[in-house]
Image (cartoon, rainbow, N blue to C red; front, side, top):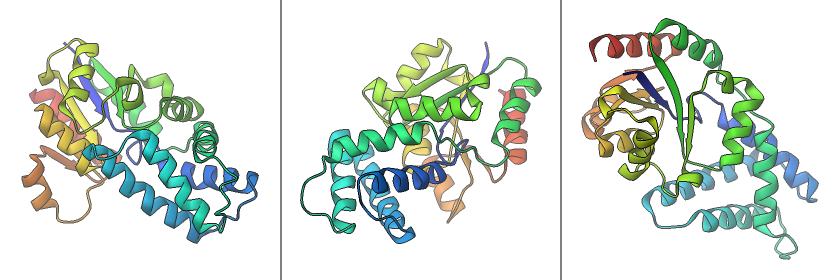
Length: 239
């Protein structure tokens, strides 16, 4: 039996916001729209709120994509409906997919994990678009250390649903006791691990840690890749 590490992708191994910022600027300018830090921050805030709605099941992926770009068109002063939000969204995702940015130290960390923990297997468990995830993983060299990729778009279900992790476990082919979920999000990663009865590590925690650990049944926390390695080493020894 292996030590199966399920990693969230964005803000855990890859810097989603750096890729998002660059891609949004490119696609807006290509479509004759202005881009500024204020516009990006508005997009980022609204996009996050929409993803939370998707996690709750109150909107679909298509609605999310349409709404985030209709909102940004309005903020850019273009209410003419000359632009198709889904076409612009597709261009945005394609642009992001070739502009991956690693979290500082992430590549060295996964290399260390593979080499330092016997029978380590590294999987990505991510909500999002498949082309976006695959492209950014490949563009950063992270793909050399990944044993499998689970993306909600392909799976038809998103974190934090237990069904998402059921599919992961079926593909991995080993019991849940061999798996641990690592991620930065309480609402998808930690709640998902709790729903699926998986061990969990909350990475880069922020806010009231004690309350969150209790509410989400979090097993470990880590604030750096060095600390995360030690946590996962401890888990692998005692599992």
